[in-house]
Length: 331
Image (cartoon, rainbow, N blue to C red; front, side, top):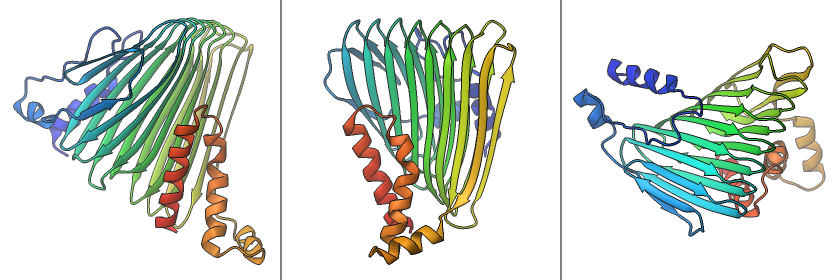
């Protein structure tokens, strides 16, 4: 990769403020180098479902403000045709619930995104991103959230198609009684998955869960998880689990980590790397299913815990259909 491109990726990865990448200010993608100016030559096509929320698009930045005391279901479709960058700023008002499904498709040798999410008091947010890019695309995403008092945040990234996918998700539990769940789902064929998932507990009585479940065929996955309990975050709970199912001699690496600075907490982590259970496949065949049907049933069962966390049937059905389609192609 060009050194200039690598340098820009490193700068992008290190962007950080108290609330992620900067809630009030759109990211300026302009650079002093002509190569990098050409790197993001295309503004992707972004379309939205009609909602009561205030949704504005400013160049490559989309600002979504969910008012107080509402329930919103926002469907965003992004189609890239060239190298692209886009940035979502999302603020969920008090006592509101917002479900956002971001459907990313298209092509481009390098596609990058940033998502800022802030949940105010007593609010809930679900951000689900499904990645269906062409086999030559490299996708790099950075997602950061801040959870207010008694709020709940759910991140779901579902990776199905690209050349390489680099995903960074950080959930900051900044107020009492807040909770977060990070879910990383991938069904990879000829794809490299590199995920860095973090839950940061900054105050008392907070709860987090990190769940990664993936299937590999002729692919590689590297999943790093971190639960960090800071000094003043007593009575907090943090959990993480990583499960990978191999369909061949693919490579999977899982690195769960705990960083604990307070003794009055509960934390756990675990990981597993397995293959399809041939005994179960044989048994299901004896009950009348074909081998392909039996394998598909086991694959759907493997991903079922992920689908169960989703609250909107439309999003659940979309991911279920994509899992079925991908499985039929890969088996």
